[in-house]
Amino acid sequence: MAELDTSGGGKKGGGKVRSKKQSTRVDLTAMVDLAFLLITFFILTTTLQKPKAMDLVMPDKDEKTKEQLPVKESTTMTILLGSGNKLAWFVGIPGKTPPTIDGYGKNALRKTLIEQAQKIKATTGEDMMVIVKPSDKSTYKDFVSILDELNITGIQSHAVVAITPPEIGMLKDNNLY
Amino acid sequence: MARAKVSRKSTAIDMTAMCDVAFLLLTFFILSAKPKTQDPVTADPPASTANFAIPENDFSTITVGQGKAYFNVQGADVRIQTLKQMGDKYKIAFTPDEEKAFANTESFGVPMNVLKQFLNLPSAQKNDYKQPGIPVDTTANNELSDWVHEARIADKYLHNTTLQIAIKGDSREEYPTIHKIISSLQKQKVNKFSLITTLKSK
Image (cartoon, rainbow over all chains, first blue to last red; front, side, top):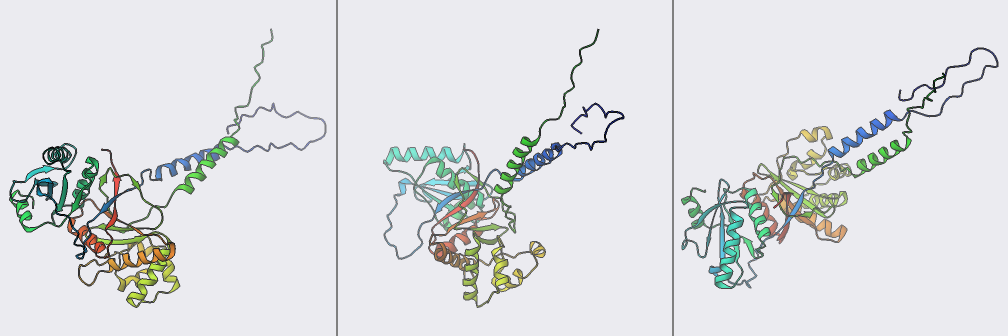
């Protein structure tokens, strides 16, 4: 197919009949076609992006460990995860300051975290501690987003704690529960 | 005047080298391709910027989707050892055939009382079988906790390493389901685990 016949025809007449020497060359074009087709298939089906893992360290639940350090209220920021991809946050003791409603993402939560961390650092001279309290109405995605934002902003001290009824009430007041 | 004859050259190109290269690449891609593990439930993990590759060995995944939990541990040897220990615990004896079937099962989500029946199903029916998920009640009936516990013992016994546990949750999963799993892990003092996410840019 890919090879043109360039042997100028057989000689006519005369002489011994010689057995024609057959070429040992095989046309590999079709085989190469097939091989590249399969390569393409395998490249496309291999998942290029392997899933990644995010490490999560939970506070020890053991009741026996009493060596817990008290956390200053002025340096803690509590984030309550509500429904509908919204969260509420406040600094200090619950109830003292009204919670602020915020969204997730680059321009919402990340800005808040950076601003508050700087503010707390400026006023108290200590690093901010973030307490994440997911409510029953929040999704797993919200939870991962929060942890991710905390990793991005480099806030080392953070903990995931169970939500309390007054805080659920707070979310309810803001239609987030 | 005689016209100068242009000698006709063959248009055939030697394909041998190209064929070699093509098959070499093909072999590489076939060998590097890993068969996609089929999860019994579609779990679409949320995106994060965390960038830790998942280890190949000594790794266990708890897939969570639609309120159900599914368990998987890497490595056939660890799987068989885990099943043996679970059999001892629940007083169920598994035949070598069932052990082999279990070693080939990636992620599964059946309670212990139907596990034997599930393992005896032909592989074609196994995919269609609607798996109810492993019971994760906070009270007495917490089989997932037992699975994780036995897998940790099995991995320590066989490979002398610490089993890394990861949770692969669906983005839309409600938090209480995840919380149930996290608390059953914390009950056995597993306070450090991974969450499987897909990569996104900052």
